[in-house]
Image 1: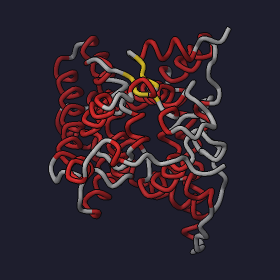
Image 2: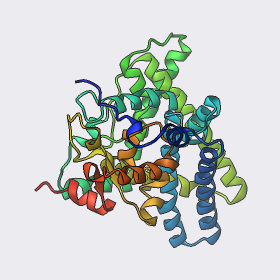
Image 3: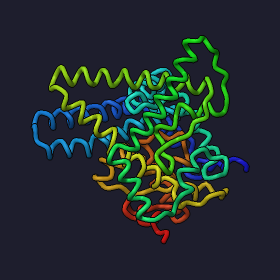
Length: 343
């Protein structure tokens, strides 16, 4: 099918407004990255210091939201919207955000831009994430259980590390990567979840090497965090970080994926119908919707806008009377009710 029709920004913004909205700030992106790390470190540090199991639980609940925030900020870097300097933007996206959750910025960028080009079309590489919905509540609860017991995390890491081993062996043999369509997806899917929490990357040398490098960065970041934890408070802070990564992060990532496109129009050429915007209160913003990711319809309409300016876009669309044309949910509970309407 043809690519999704782009919406001319001149319908809603003059040239000066559009330039201001799409120009990435030199300090806001780095500050958001710093914010995600500061909050995460403070959460696990204070919980470890308290030696209180309730504080440990709260830390895991909220550190998962900041881990999702790091993934969201890597997504902004994939669009070149985290910093106006490309090298700084890519460093922030590759090392300071993506590496923390095991993703590769460059591979993700190619894969993700394909998703924008063919949103909710047969060629959309993310269509498998929304296709199973609506589903039953029992099916969703089984997924929640897998996420919160660490099964999703374990399966994903086994698949990722196994694929990375193929890449390491290829590097040791001195093989030259041959880029293919599958290679771009191979390094990326660990920020996405299929219906069973797994992905099935096609093995190719370029993809395997990309995953090997992503795993290497992931292990470097984990080693730094572990060393800092042992030096300051012992094992507890790192174990709380890891617990968040293995449980709440996986659940929040799933809810975010569901809310973005599940039960929206498939195959339509109307750009207003492909994604969902969900209103988010403070709890949602602290968990499933960090850093304005809930404005997903606006992001698909104007994907070059930095995340912190999406509320401005939402307001502009409202002034133009276009909110009625969009899919807007009052909250995430309403989304989950809608996508579990089957049966």
